[in-house]
Image 1 (tube, rainbow, N blue to C red):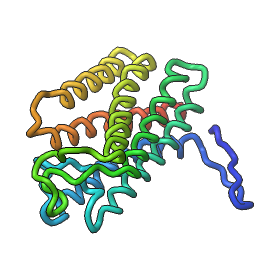
Image 2 (cartoon, one colour):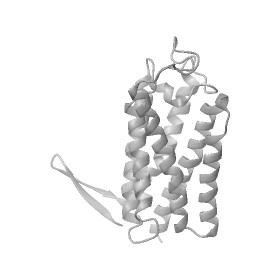
Image 3 (tube, rainbow, N blue to C red):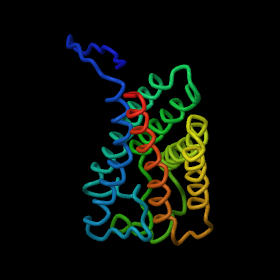
Image 4 (cartoon, helix red, strand yellow):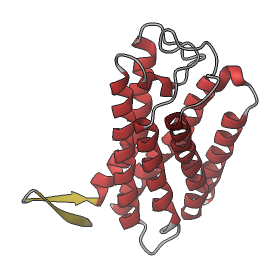
Amino acid sequence: MTSTTLTQAGTTRVVSTATLLAAGAAAGPLFLGLGLAQAFTRDGFDLSRQPLSLLALGEYGWIQIANFVLSGLLALAGAAGFRRALRGGPAAAWGPALVAVLGVGLIVAGVLRADPSMGWPAGAPEGNPETMSWHSYGHGIGAMLSFGSLTVACLVFARRFGRVGALSSVLVALATVVVMAWPDQDSVSVRMVLGSALVFGWLTAVSLHTITERKH
């Protein structure tokens, strides 16, 4: 099994490729699991109209900020694992790079918070704010990088699989685009969750498949 030796503060640690890929596989379940857990337990939050990003605001906003950042770091670890595992094969260059962009996008979206809107937190405008702050623009860019890079990654990784796997990857990408681009502003928060579930589920499946593939 391929491994890399890392030295931190005089301590030598060996991180295997499988461990890095497992970290990437965990990014999506962590992000969606912790996000939805907050959505259903934070008093007054309404997922039908308030996107998960807004959970970064308010008294317990630090939890969602940490969720974004930790999920991003896990995705970066997964990108490092893919870079090792795919070396010399299809998607070896762009595949890991796109997963790394996902990680960076999540971290950016976590550090730069969206503006209060849609009635969250209490006292926020009931709709979108009339003007956007610079950090809200940054948050949006981070979110677009995350969704966009992972959707493109579905198409890039399709080259690695047989007919069924390639078709599944392409269908996930197409379904994500349809869900996210559907022209209904009233359902955007729910559609963002569905889109996240599609691409993050794909990343988890591909990460676990790559771990299994390396064992044979």
